Structure formats: C-alpha cells, structure tokens
Image (cartoon, rainbow, N blue to C red):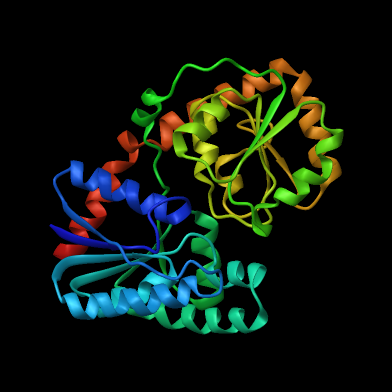
Length: 316
C-alpha cells in the first residue's frame, strides 16, 4: 500500500504523531512517504505559506497514491490536489477554536471558513480524542473516527539512567497561551520545589528531565490529548493537569492523576505543594498511570487498529 503523509512539520503535537504513525506503518510493510514542504518561519505567514507551497508541490509532482493522509487543516489543501484513491484528514483539537485563542478575529474567521470547507474533501476524518469527535459532530455535523495516539515504549530504552531530583516539577510543551505556562509561572515563587521548563528541547532530553522529576504539571487552557501525559504515565511520574479537552479521558481524578480547573492558580498551587510531600499518593498515582498506559495506549495494543483502518479504507 502506497501512502503519502502531509504535515507542516513532523515533530511535536499532531506532526510528531504523523511521524510516529508513518514509522510504525513502514515497519509493518506499508510504503509511506512524508511530504516535506519549506515555508516562511514567521508566525502570521507559516500556515499561509505552507498551504500555498504544499499545494503547488502536490500539483506539480502528480504522483499517485493509494491513500493521502493530511494532518491538520492547513495540510488539507495539498491533500485535495494529491492524486489518491482515498483521502484522510486528521485534526487534534477544534482547529478554529485554537486559532481563536491564539490569533486575531480576522484569522479566526478565515480559519472557521477553511475548517468547514476542508472537512468535505476527505473520505475519512479522524481525531485522537472522544471529546473532539463529539464536538465536531455537534458543531459541524461532521463524522470523525477516533483513534488514540499510541505510545512507543521501545524508545524509552534509549534514555540514560538519571538520578531523581527531589521536589522537581516539570512543564513540557510550547511556550504559548493555550498551554497555560503563564499560570504556572505566576505561582512559581510559592511552590515548595524547583520548576524546570522544557519548551524547546529534544525528545530524549525532555524525557530524561521528566524521568528525574517528581511531578508533571499541565496547566493548559485547551488541549486534545497531550502525548506527554502518556509518557509520564509510562515513567510512573504523577501528573497534575487541567480538566480540559481530552485530558479527562486519560486522567481519572485521584486515580491516574489529579485534575484541576483551568486558570485557577491557587488550586494548582495547593495540589502541587500537597503532592510534593505526599509520597504515598504520588506513588499510587504513578503506578496507576503506568498500568493504564500499558494496558490501553501502546503500539502493541493499538497498531492492529491502525493497520485495519488503512486496509479497510483502501479496499472500500
């Protein structure tokens, strides 16, 4: 089976997911190619330049595929112009709402129109959380299929052995409004421990810092499902996260982690400081998170679902 993946980049968030899926499908014997498209690295020009240049690339190259799989709304334009039997569009999170939180009202209006239009170009729509599937159905009457993004536990074998840093709190994610990093920084002077921020770091370095930490904090204002929660679960690092987006699909409060309201710095502070001294609860949460990810979210568990999805689609 010949498949083309299209994404603005193949690291972090949905782009990182695309890269991991491609790698696993290749290991399974699929012929998967990644479209790499240069674009202008300026905030307001990144997506428009990617849309234009990737679409031109798709039209000029003219190669035929069994499936073209686009990741996020900007990639859908190149998907439209790619010759393929079947077309898939994956969106993690509600795209127009993400744009609304980060950009101007004009950009939001453009994103909303684009979002409505591009959903109709795909034969299949997929997302990584139940809540996003539900919201798109309610918002645009769009039918999404839902697949959790699996965790590749074999990659953790490459990590160095690190010493635990007592009372170290870690943030891993983009330094941007939707990730709520400002909420954590606001309470940093009152936290009875040290915070490290991993905002632009190689995966191996971030994971070694996570492995050495006592708590992972995710103070996001909006999310689909952060991959770093699964990574913390596997390393048995307890997680404190906001109850937004798909996060409650992974974290059952006080069972596999601790959920707090978004934008509430005082409740976040209280839970961090309490967990820093409650070793019994920290260990219980870490162990429960590990069992959850091992039983539900690894490639060993989920790869057959992905393979079946692509095979069924191309044969339909």
